[in-house]
Length: 618
Image (cartoon, rainbow, N blue to C red):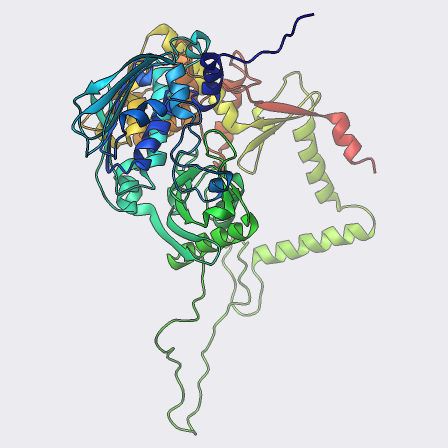
């Protein structure tokens, strides 16, 4: 039998490696921008076409490369930053593995133009599918320019699984955010289809955050600053009242490198404990400086996962730093024992002065739970009010009955009538007269087989979703025009997302138009919605839509209907009147699929009578 194990050709090996390093166009942008930073660039320009599927061009004014270095840079594991294994533990550069350019060249059409300041001419290298086509001298500016065309042209299976342009562009914008935030001294410009998305000048950290995420964020930022022997922390957190329902403005950076760290995220969330509205996340932008020998960044090909030698200590430092900053800004109670100034305590002027104690007047008959005080005014003197006498009598009767192991007759009649009203079985599955709301979250109603529990928010989502789908299918749009149109300013990522779904929003009854760079005007909203704040609805719609797992264009309208239903549904904590509960249940069971929300979550459950009886069997 012949040997069956053999070495893979370099081209195939590089295509496999590209699957780890280059997952989508955003991966190319990340690697090339990081290389530009390592080259000492102070200005970086990114041109994108069709979300990077057609073209990615990145130019910088860094140090450039010699002809030999330019060619060597495309070889696997060719790097200028590592000489020995020990160098892995003192890394301060962004890239170091030497895999990025080789991986990109294996799956795209790549042109490189580079020139050092001291050279008279630059170098042009053209590689297609890891095959060198051209290497020659050329005239070009100082620095480096990469042009990546037709990404994944020779790996059709990978290209087929790329998402819609709006999704791929969103990922590119995320990568620009992760690179630009820790490097405010670098000018970064991003174009998409010749339109400017970001034009970030050289500024400080706070201004860079505002430039990236919009002016609205500026008012919520709180400074965080802590220096210790283990780690130095600097950055900003958002005030709890500006927390959002979805994640997207949470950033950790270590030595200017973006990282994901769920453990440290819990430290921040713990610091915000009991301060946040339900199901919301605070913004934070925390930059950590630490000895490179105390971390290991060589964990994952994308280098976004980092191990820390003292992670538990750092957790405590992060938590304390965030908590202290919240206290300084009066978000949480804090005690400062280093306050300047004296506390003014009044003392007697003369030794024989009489001290007059404050006269506190109380009403011994006051009952804060007395709801009948307006109908039955309190009598003067020591006499109790009518309601107090009635309460006292009822309590005495209740305990008197308990001594005889039975309730008083009128209490027994009251209890039995209540039970009969709640649990009497009828031919109907449910009745509006037998419905209770629990914790402003669940609706309880008896049914023949037990007790039905309905999630009120998910039920409302299902009702709204089916209404929106009817509108989409019938093309009968009813738009409610706003008396005073509202303007909304978005960050570039959300702005591009809104542009991509404007046509579908129009079919749902929205009248939203562009009103300048990253600014939109809301003239009308769907008539089926009772919209108090159109701006809030649009913001929530974008949050729901951009975090949705479904983004295929064939299901775009359905996904917008799902996102709009979730954004418009009543929130948990909303107290409903009896007629509102009845209306909600009537509409829910008129739906084609009442048991599940639009995104497939359970809307209702039935607790069988047998299970209820078992809980009382012991």
